[in-house]
Image 1 (cartoon, rainbow, N blue to C red):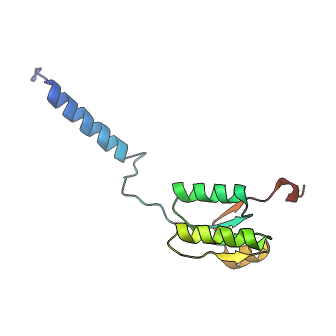
Image 2: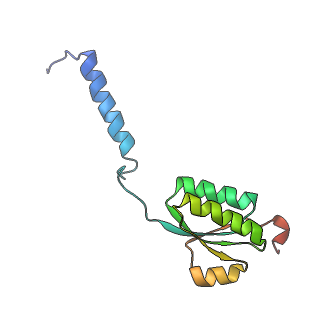
Image 3: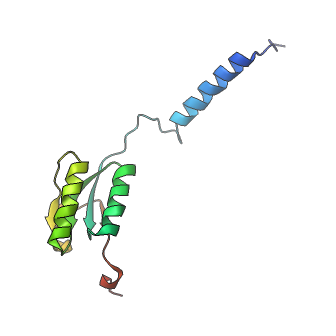
Length: 120
């Protein structure tokens, strides 16, 4: 039989290192892995749209490439905030979502328009 004399200090050091390493690897992906940046567009730049967009910007690697809204004041306000959050990189601004989709080809589109705009 091996050394059965396990001291507390070695036990804590070994288990702490094991926990730290397991925290750095989730499902076989190392902590240094950086997912690709996705191109995002937002249609509807009111409170709900901006809230969804800014939360996405916090948790994912995204670049906001375009914003769309019929209200030009809302649109410009959202653009100013987005530019501030992504190092002064301005998104393209649109008032017609079809043109946005045709020109930008975003990978992710957030829709923050009011419910009454939806057609069933």
